[in-house]
Amino acid sequence: MPVRKIPKNYRNVTGIAAHRKAEGQAMFESTLERDFITLLEFDPTIETFEVQPLVVDWVDDKGGAHGYTPDVLATFKLHDHHSKVLYEVKYRSELAQHWSELRPKFRAAVRFARSHGWRFKIITEVEIRTPYLENAKFLLSFVRQGPAEEAHMDMLDEQIRQSRNTTPAELLGRIFQDEWNQARLLPSLWYMVGTRQIGFDMDTKLTMNSPIWSLHK
Image (tube, rainbow, N blue to C red; front, side, top):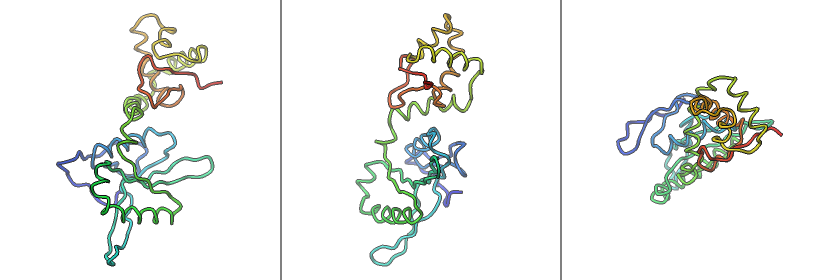
């Protein structure tokens, strides 16, 4: 569970996001944190994450005791073990404006993470606000809903195996001629893209004319 409650904030957007991978409530204090949580939820290498999971104790140059709460602790799925990363989510302007105040906290977090065999990482809007995020937001709703019909997935899989490289528009057109039936296939197509059953460059904006491909050799 988070170690502290997030108060109402009239400068930033605050709230609680519903995510399956979250341990406890996925609370956020800004839209940037909310977007980062979306990326964690969508990332297939992330097993779980926890928002504001712990307090890092540190002492300043004058001997004063302080506590610092990182934003997120994420657990990655690896082949033979798990890896954990502590994240701090900040706008670059915040880092520049308050660096002298933030630096000792971050140093303490680095030491704390290393002592546990983890890593500490600062992440900003430059890494978060990308085409990947927009694709993740779009595809997550289809991933959560699941495919409309398994028969649709079978048709899509068979056709993309034959064509290997295509686009969503071309793939649907090869299965059905009429637009109504093509539209019925779309939820399953986006589900397969979102669950990495169909290949797509996540760093480019997803459209009906984006290159997609079969992941089966």
